[in-house]
Length: 332
Ligand code: TRP
Ligand code: SF4
Image (cartoon, rainbow, N blue to C red; front, side):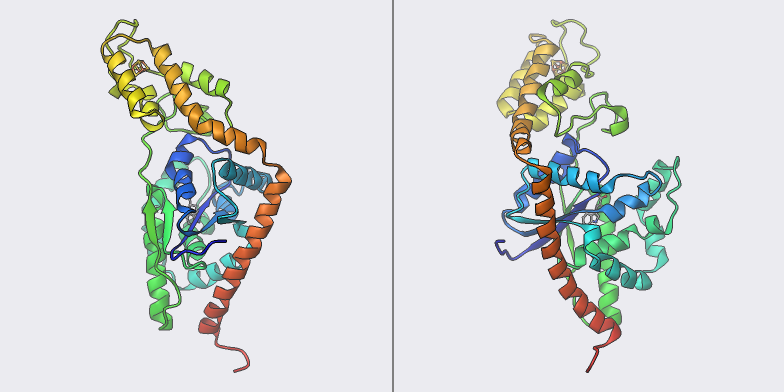
């Protein structure tokens, strides 16, 4: 593993296949950062239980699938340490200690918590684990002295809580043994699902990293465009068209301009524009498909096993420092 000045840690919950929104939102950033930071990326399987404890998910299978998505997207196990949260028990050990000194008010005021309770009102997530989610997330981060944490906007409040917990710990124990982590926000992609709703598995409106070119085409073909444009010769407005949002993320400027001019002049049809969009999306997905073909489950398991080992070594060392500060040294 190369050594850099800065450490980053980031995790994802294993809740299903990744789509283009995940790629643009976080995963792409990971693949860039791994070249200049000591990077740890982990599967947050304990966190997945906070909303899915009733679902009897096959977390092992989901975790392997998630890591496969990462590697196919370009996360490189020779550059980054890839591990499973529940395989590094230090996360739960530190979580217990941090819980003792975290005021309930900080957690109850967390806007992400309040949002989720509202959004997921159809299920019973009012558990202690759900409320203390950010405390576990803090442990995930500070065990590895992460300076920066690449996340999406919705996670910003959790990083604030993490910093507050670190400061409180340092104040209470009168010693600075953790790094105060900063968020590295990726601009939230403006991509909606191809039916204009939020990308979601249950709507079937997302393009997955595992989609074949034909799958992508089926989804693009049915996508809403500028609804005022009925005939090919009608002048259109790309700025109200979902397909054009995909062009903005995946097409070259040249293609974007060409499509914009054609649409505004009523000179190209939507099918032609969508075909160009398919090409652009495919040029992102094709290298992923090729990498995925080379990835066996047993290779993924090896990657995870050696990542778990490295993560455990770092985390256990940190816990020795924490435990001696909190409980005192044995034999001394
Ligand atoms: N809460 C994050 C999410 O839902 C996942 C996560 C868990 C995480 N622990 C983390 C992200 C630590 C960054 C760092 O996306
Ligand atoms: Fe959308 Fe392209 Fe059709 Fe214009 S030509 S409405 S940008 S799909």
